Image (cartoon, rainbow, N blue to C red; front, top):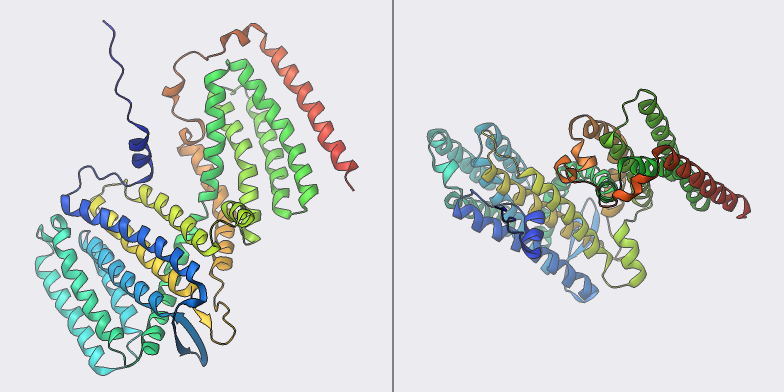
Amino acid sequence: MDTPNPHKPGLLRRIIEENFINLQGLPVSVKILTVGGYLAVFGMLFFTLVVELAGERLPTVEYMLVDQNFTVPLIVMAISGLAFILGWAYLLTGAAAAKARIFLPVLVLYALQIFLVTGGQLLLLFLEMLFLMLVLVIYGLTFRTKFWRDLPGLHFFGWLGAVAVIVVFSIGISATNAQVAAALSANFAIVMLLAYVFWILLGLSIIDLGVMIGRGVTRIARKLLPFPVFSALVVFALLIHPAAAALVFWLVKDGFLLLDVVFSALLILGALVVWIARRWSWSTGAVVLTLSLATPVVSLGLTLAFAGHDFTELLLAATGIFPPMLLFVGLTTYNLLDMGIKFTAVDGRTLPKRARVLLYFGMLLLVLACMLFLANERIAGTNQSFQNIQTVINNLFALSALILGVPYVVWIIWKRRDLLTGPESDFSVPPRLPWLARVPGPAWIAISLVTASVCACVLIGIVFFIP
């Protein structure tokens, strides 16, 4: 009796499962907070678009920092302030749902950030110290109970109220809007330092993008081709790669594209070593082909990052559909969302999944609020941005990819080879083009060598004929 095929989930469900946090096993309150977090994030993105389209028509407030006058739209000040409160409420709730070794540093960080913007006012300092001591006493008496771990949805509202009161007393009751804006600017300058850590880690996303593209092509080839034909395809890709990379480098004259030529030569050398050692296999060939297809993507990403661009920015700049700021925030949020899925997929004793979800949304909201405020902070008189956030982040992104990229790829090859080849269970069936195996394997290798040599000569000829 034939076993019925399992029901394949629909396209919409697959998109949700791949791009959003898996909520299975979480309390209902955490699920509600997760949905609320997503709504807040996408609301921030929509508001960023509105602000960008409104341009200079929005009313602004002028304030002074370090003997220089700045302006920021009033509505930006209000929304980023609300996101600041909401972000810290999520962050403290998630930390409280974890172990004390997580909660106490986060609480100290929050107290330090508020302390730095009190301006030395004794009453505010006293209220903040009183709040901190009260929280420590309550937590010290109850941290072993299930309240903090099992009821995060309940104490979220407590944190939300407490953070709102502290922020209002520290910032909101300032005499003028200018003082509120100055205090928020100082707060977000501190948050920005923490956000830089995220963008350094996000530099690895260009490696992941290259691997994803290379793995996709490799999996298609493995499903279609017999092993001798697949090996010939790998040989062709290895030989044509340096010639194509050299042509692109000659046309663009960018040093980072020269790295692709070096990487391609190293891949050829590594493949030869494996072949001579008689360790060539389906898995080894898939690893080599994926890396050969991934390195051009990484090199191009590094080039664009150091030039102050990204792939989508170039496309949208050519079409003029979306403003650059929305694109910048959108791409950053996409990267953070992707990292959030990986971060929240783990469930541990020190940092359980429910705590990870709330910590993730707290950090994401703080980073978005920081980006929104600082990106709209202008120098009074010239209306120029005080901080070129995108340039700084692009440089951090590219440098982290260069410094962390090679160890990351080595770790993938050593520990997570399936990220390069795909799961072996997908290739348990025979290839879909078995008739190609009628041609002997050495003949396919010879065909690939001749074809690659001809193509390489054509590419090199193009280099010499281009002035």
